[in-house]
Amino acid sequence: MLANASENETKELWWSIYAWWSCVLVLKMMLLTWFTGQIRVREQVIHSEEDRMWMTKKSEIILCTTGDGHPDVIRIRSAHRHDLETVLPFIVFTPLWLNVETCNSTVKILIPCFALVSILYTLLHMQLLQMSNLWKLSSLATLYCIVIYICTIAAVRYSISIMDLI
Image 1 (tube, helix red, strand yellow):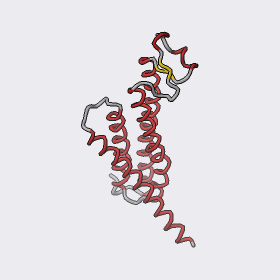
Image 2 (cartoon, helix red, strand yellow):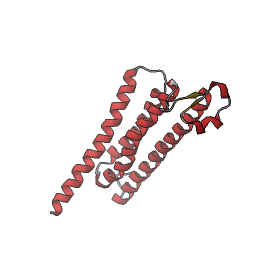
Image 3 (cartoon, rainbow, N blue to C red):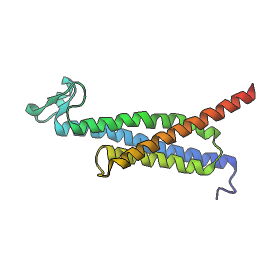
Image 4 (cartoon, helix red, strand yellow):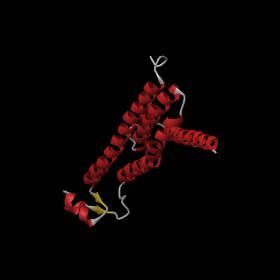
C-alpha cells in the first residue's frame, strides 16, 4: 500500500498516527486527574480546606497539605507526574521529528509503541497490573529511550539542515 504512496500521502499517514496516539495519551492523562479525585473522595484525603465540601464522611477526613496522605494518592500522583515528564516532551518534539524523519516503518512502530508502553507503565505504577518490577523498569527505560531517540534525531537533522544553509 505505502510502496506506491507519494511522499505527501506518507506524511499524512504519519501525522494521523501521531494525532491518534497523542489524543489517546492526553485522554489517559485526563483520566488520571479524574481518578485522583475519585481516590481522594474514596479515601477521604484532601490537600486544602476548600476540598472539605466534597467529602461525605466529615469525621474521617485526612488533611495533608503536601498533597499525598494515602499510598493510593501517592501512586496516582506519581504516575501523573511521570506522564508530565515523558508524554509532554513526546507530544512537543514528535512533530519536529516527523518533519525530518525519512523511515516509514520507524514512525509506524515508535509512536504506537510509546503510547502503549506509557499506558502499560501507568497500569503497573498504579498497581492495577501485578507484575514484577522488571516490567516497570523496562517500560520506563523504553519510554525514555524513545523520547531521547526522537529528540536526538530531530536535533541532529535540524542542525545539519541549518549547517547546509550557512
